[in-house]
Image (tube, rainbow, N blue to C red; front, top):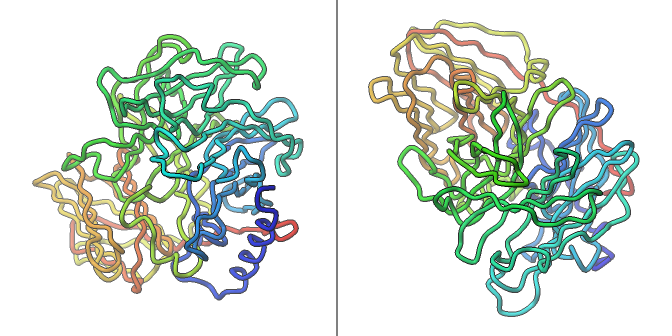
Length: 482
């Protein structure tokens, strides 16, 4: 191991955090790290009725200003209500991943679960770490029980990528198609154009580059966290493009997250078409999909925003930071993606409190689901904590999330065009906010850091349903403290 004391340091950090009193900013029904920072969800899969959610995490990320390497954490669940925090899945313990276990995915083969990931290496010296100074190695580990992983194997290095690619080639997504194993890698070219590299293999170990997926015109300089889904016959390339010019009602974040319409075979001739954003809030990135045994396609993402000036939140001062967004069910309807809250979340609802809103309404809760049903053509203003505001201007057809006050912690304003507002399904959870619009037509996700717990709707013609939300149950299984 490059740093043999690292597991012990992580164990100490976990032990310290476990002894702290409850944190009002920590979510109750969103997943969060016990200690340090959390980033991309990875390795999503369902094996024997158990869902596995791996994620990039830096357990020391809030405890030191020095660079420390990320690992893969691991949650498992059967019902998205009861979870188990498993032992750390992958450590950066070789020369090929010494500076961090970066994003990747899972592949189930018989009684084995394989995890593929990017091993990050940063060479010492004066480098830009884009064109030189960085290794992005593809590695694989395997497990017979889905929890303990061994046999770390190097599959690809920088030398295996096209010479027109920069050092930014990462985040392997694995899938089976037409009798072969495909690996999708997000890439940045020497001309600073984002693209997708497709590699093929017959055995899941030896890969060759077979195709590059591009858009007709350049779309950003890097495509992170690629993924693939096919819904109602429509192929989709999910990814997080970086470097998209901001617009007034679109592409407002530091980096974007959504899906391209995809045509053609991935391994020969596929091209990316129109892009659809998954979220219009401040914090939603690095989305991954999971094909459940019942046929549903689920989305799970990091509720954070890479390189945003508000990326480090006030929760970091409490020893932890970042959240995984609520799982969503993804469908393709009327030529666009539609996202709805995972239906299993209804089991967390308390007793419904229904109310008319002609005279306005108010609730006192930091952990709830609030569903608004305005009548057609109504303006809606929902005040969140001290100074947050989610509002709809029916005449201008604009939905606005304004967190420019104190509870936004550096977040400002996000706006999206919306022809009508039929329903607004809002989830509040400590410092997490997710608003589903018109039964999944659009979603806005954000962190919010108010001290108050008051939520109030200005008068509008319509009704509201308020549900207090119970916490998820997490069983801690940190073997040997990590």
